[in-house]
Image 1: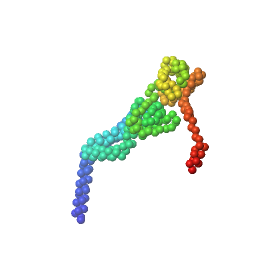
Image 2: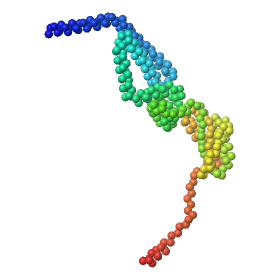
Image 3: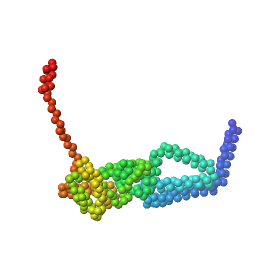
Image 4: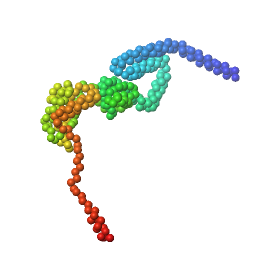
Length: 301
């Protein structure tokens, strides 16, 4: 028993002495590795602030700027860690870390596939110059002003003040119409007048009314007017003109104003805007002689 204890103590002493010799031999490399790690930490802090300032100039969303800056800082720290392991000649450990990181990244990616896709889509959308907070857009069947773009979703404020939250992935994968990219919008107005109306007078009056109602329309010639069909109760037309607007709400207000002014002008000139009327007419006269029917039934009996 004593011999076994002495042997074990001897083996332990040899191991400790071997580790001590290895530490002494690799002391310069260890010191250099520690210096690399400390340097990577301070460089990461500087990179975090620098990247945040750069991204903030391009992106209005603070959450996007923060996540991009943090990712940059983490990449610097990981680079310093790998350099330190390489200095210590721990190639096997470095390979194991890379393999483990790949497996863990794959597992996390599969588990959080939807979340990660929305996060990446949010970063991509935030760097698009044609999509900015305050723009009036239409996408995925909704129309409104962009209120917020973060790492999860895309928030719209509709004209009726309702908030619509859409996942970033759907914004990136579907068409988006941005009304704020142009300073002009075209207003479409459809109406009809009675068959007894003077069509040339209606056209001229409509153009003059719209020209007088909107400063952007310099003359009646700038208003497009086309008769489209002989309707069931009216002759219908299409009227188009341009206004200075960058949101759908301004377009709706302009269309409302045009309808009001045209109705006033038509009433003043006794121009009729008919509506469908259904007339039920019974020309055939049905006569039932109940008395004869009763007499015949009695005579048979």
